[in-house]
Image 1 (tube, rainbow, N blue to C red):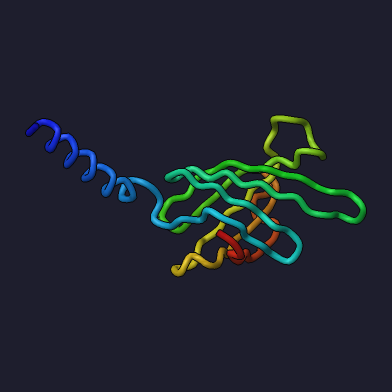
Image 2: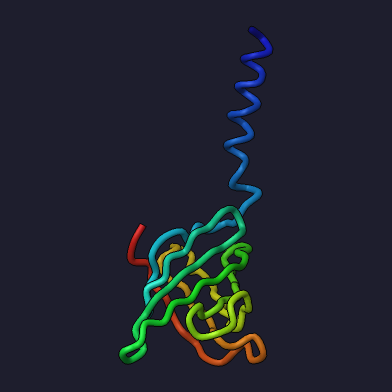
Length: 125
């Protein structure tokens, strides 16, 4: 019985310390800028993001993977219907606001990481 109680307490203490080893801010959810809606999925300090938007009559789809450390996140992305499959060709880097409702950052290509500046706002869970 003492073993079961000890293991239960150990498990509970482990669960409560998990956030200390992951990212400081949670960016899971739906984010928007002027023309794009992005869905971010975060597991600890790993980020996955996907997006689709209209470019004239064409629908553009992209997805990306990267990391978050503290309130900084960066990821490489691939425009799925424009480029060779499997190659990441664009780059985004953001700083998340203290309240977790806004990201300000840059976008560009892999060869030119800073091409423009933009801001995202959180709009959904």
